Image (cartoon, rainbow, N blue to C red; front, side, top):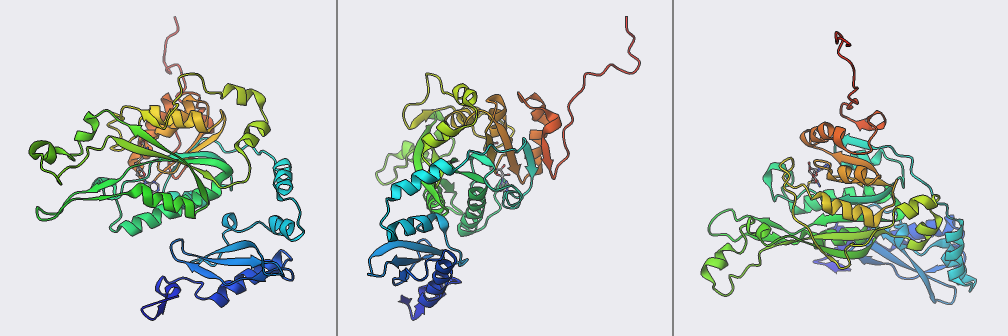
Length: 403
Ligand SMILES: C[S@@+](CC[C@H](N)C(=O)[O-])C[C@H]1O[C@@H](n2cnc3c(N)ncnc32)[C@H](O)[C@@H]1O
């Protein structure tokens, strides 16, 4: 397809520029899985909403059997969105596909991660690359705000910010176990007006983030609304002008909610599989959630009053997410850990934690406070790019006189 005389793929600076290149990539893949002689290719189409090429796979009689999806920027085949080779084989042989999925579920082994409690200083994109594949059971985080609070925003352009978030969400996908959850606390941001003649701008970050999650191989599960008391919203300044003047068109709702978006790394394993196959029945039993849990997608929680971090989320929020989406003993990752709220909740609830932040001041807060976290053996915590914290021994003073 051409726009202003230029191919869309050229305009977008894709690596896969045309139909021939897309077909070439798929033919190589079909040869690798030994299906090149039995499958024909349909006409590849570029999908510039998701920056990919879609190549239909057809049987000898021309009927559609599946699809290969290629990342247009990197030329890689996106496995999570491509029809699985065993499903293609089943379709060619007219076998029952559900049996194939069942066999995979029966063959798959539940592997317990052997990661230790970890605290790392640095850019998450780099630290995540050092982690073993599928070594994390849950990710819960709130990302840095785009320019909402200039004291900790480092992005000039919104696209640049989204690109960085995509890099981290993609790397999280690699370290997260198939079928487990990535929960993100996020809300729209308000860009204050630069002068009296301009209006302020609100950016719906959660919706752009949603698209990134879907493109990176996660399935959407839930949009939970974290509801704060009314007073919490007035601090943003939104709605004050209307409260005073009451003119139509000036109306602006005072924001008292944030999203807690729940995604799951794409998998054909059912949730039940994780409960049935967990190697420790006692742990499954001990992780059950008692009465009084949140029944709807509106969770009323007071905001954090922590002065340690300007954007800390409340411990009550972290505790709910960890209880609902992980077993005891699981590894919970927060790639934007700030003051370490996820670590506090994880240790309290007997989960392991992996906390990364690129700001030394926040890592220092964690280093100071970790001593008071429950169930943490300081001798076994792994410290990356920062000094370890030694346990305080109850030692007698050198010249203490024993009575
Ligand atoms: C919204 S705050 C998280 C606050 C945290 N939930 C808490 O309760 O304290 C986002 C954090 O991400 C960190 N951050 C921003 N970019 C990062 C990056 N590329 N790698 C690691 N941390 C980053 C910031 O330093 C900030 O502490």
